Amino acid sequence: MTENGKINSFEIAKGQIDIAARYLDLDPGSVERLKFTKRELIVHFPVKLDNENIRIFTGYRVQHNVSRGPAKGGIRYHPSVNLDEVRALAMWMTWKCAVVNIPFGGAKGGVECNPKEMSLHEIERLTRRFTWEISLLLGPEKDIAAPDVYTSPQVMAWMMDTYSILKGYSVPGVVTGKPVELGGSLGRFEATGRGVVITALEALNYLKRPIEGAKVAIQGCGNVGGTAAKHFDRLGAKIIAISDSQKGIHNEEGLNLERILEYKAKYQCFVCEKKEESEITNEELLELDCDILVPAAIENQITEKNASRIKAKVIVEGANGPTTPEADEILNDRGIFVVPDILANAGGVTVSYFEWVQNLQELIWSEEEVLDRLTRIMQKGFKEILEISVSKKIPMRTAALVLAIGRVAEATRLRGLYP
Ligand code: NAD
Image 1: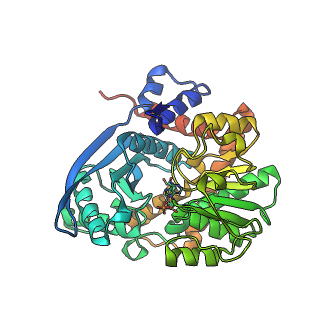
Image 2: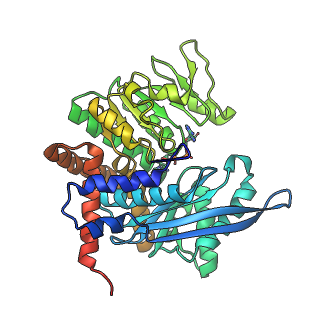
Image 3: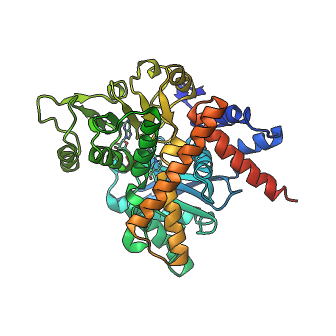
C-alpha cells in the first residue's frame, strides 16, 4: 500500500474491492473490471498569474464507473493532488452513490496547486481554464462536478459560468454545490456535515449511548468539520477539540464553538483565550479520550501507527479515506465502531443529487424538504449497512462496500456487455 513511504489510496481502494468480493457471488472478471477506472483525463494548462508570469498547472478528471448513472464527483485544489488519489476518490464516489442508492456513477477531479498562495483572481482564471480543459467530459447528463477540499460555491459558480458560455446558454445542472442564487440547493452547503451528525446519531442509538454530553473531537474545521461541529454542539454534545491544517484547540470541558470559529475566521487560526484551553497537534487530537471522533480533513490520518492509541468509542468518517486498512483491523479488534466514509459523508452527494434534480426540473425545494429527504436517505443507508454488518458478522466498512459493490455489479450485469 505504500510507495516511497507514502500511502497509495488507489491501492487501498482496489484492496477494498477484494475484501468485499469475498461476501458477494461475483465472477472474477466483474471484480477485476471494478478495479479499473473508465476514463482518465490529464490536462496541463497555462494560467496567467497576477505578476503577469504564466504558470503551467496539472489537473485531472477521472470517471470510475457510470453503470448506475452519470458520473458525479468533486473537484479538489491541493498541492498533493495526483492521479492515483483522484482515481481512489472517483472509485469511492461510485460506492458512495450506490450506498445511498442515488442514480449516479463515480468521478473526481483536481488540480495540483496551493490555493492558499494564490489570489482570488488567479483561482478564478485557473478554474475557468481547467473547466474548459475538462469540458469534453462534463455535462448534466454526463459528468457533474461539485466542491471538495479548497473549492467553494464560488468556484462552482465560475465552473458553471464557463461551461454555460461554451454552450451558449445557462447550464446550472453541470455542477452542484453552487450558490443558491445560481440554482444551488438550499441545505447543500451544510449537507455533508449534517449527514455526519445524522449517522453519528444512528450509531449512538445502536450502541445505546446518549448524544447529550458526548465528547466530540473533530479533525478539520472546513465545510464538513465546521458544520458537523455546529450541529453536534446544538444537540448538546461537547466539542472538546477541533483543528485546521496547522493545529487544533482543546478544552476538556467543551469549547465555546461560536467564539472559536469567529476568531478562526478573523485571525485565520485558533486563539486560546481561557486557561482551560490549550493548543493541540492534529496527531494529539486523534488520540483524545472522547466518545465520537470525526476525521474531517484528508486521507490516511488513522494508520497502523496510531490506531492502537485511538480512544474514541465511535469514529464517524467525514473525510474520504481517513483510515488505512491496517488501522481498520486494529480498530475492529479493539471494538471501536466505525461509520465508514462512503456512508458518513454521503450527505453531500445526496443533496447534490437533489440539486441536480431541482435544476433539471426547474424546481426549488424548501430547506425542510431537503433536510427531511436527506435524513431519511442517510438513516436508510445506515440501517441497510448495519443489517449486513450484523448478519454477516463483518465490520461496517466491509458491509457498506458489500452493499455498494453488489448494487454496481448488478447494474453492470443487467446492462450487459457491448458489443
Ligand atoms: P474544506 O476545504 O472546507 O476543509 C478542509 C479542512 O481540513 C480545513 O479545516 C483544513 O484546514 C483541514 N486540513 C487540510 N489539510 C490538513 C491536514 N494535513 N491535517 C489536518 N487538517 C487539514 O474541505 P471539506 O469540504 O470540509 O472536505 C474535508 C473532507 O471531507 C475531504 O476529505 C473531502 O473529500 C471530504 N468530503 C467533503 C464533502 C463536501 O461536500 N465538502 C463531501 C464528501 C466528502
